[in-house]
Length: 294
Image (tube, rainbow, N blue to C red; front, top):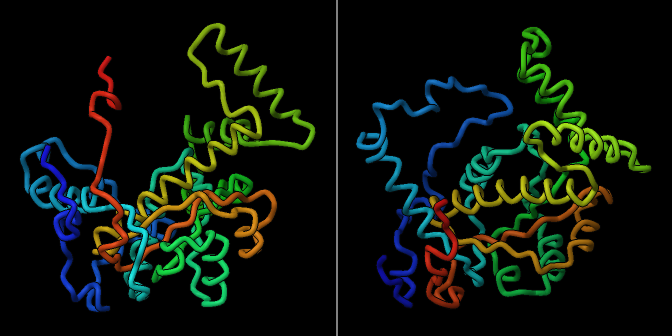
């Protein structure tokens, strides 16, 4: 593995043409998955395309550059990212995988100047927040599972004109509600615990979610997947970002008018980074400490 130099240019690894940074032509926008059900033939890579193919030669280097070039940068020049670039990155963010495709999160792009200043204050006036060109709040919305399920069912069935059949029908109409439904008295939590325990006596069985704590973890995981997509897309466009979780989440919820059932996962500051915003060379634990072969 090559050494990462401390100097800013080499640490960034790659550059994007200035035309993108200065509001020029942005990368093509991704289709919105909520309105366009793409042809799977265009998404799934065939065996012939792996691993030595034009797909690998064109897609993999760009992905690697974005992945390796993304760093947590904590100081920016304050210039907003062009709107078309932000919208493209947000479209990429919602392409993140999510359990049962419920997409149990919301992404808030904070644009009103007064709210940006207050959000920076609620981020403890960290330099990343006070100097960012753009600020995003990633919110877990497990509480919206029912409405999201209904919307997804409408999309998948073409508003009921193409009813689901077989295992997928059973999954979305029976299993998902059974796993996600909650009540104040905890009746559904108890029922799930009993069902999971009984099934586990004879076959491998998931043991969660059964409690509110399990659902909270579930929600933050889904939201974090979308956050990672957003930061990688920003990197692909040539912009820096930094996720922040050490913030006043309750105050941010009040600022955004969130209900008590919604939870802030993180704030992402983004923009054109300044050299002093990169505090240290990239450091990672040894590969073997983190990756295990069994």
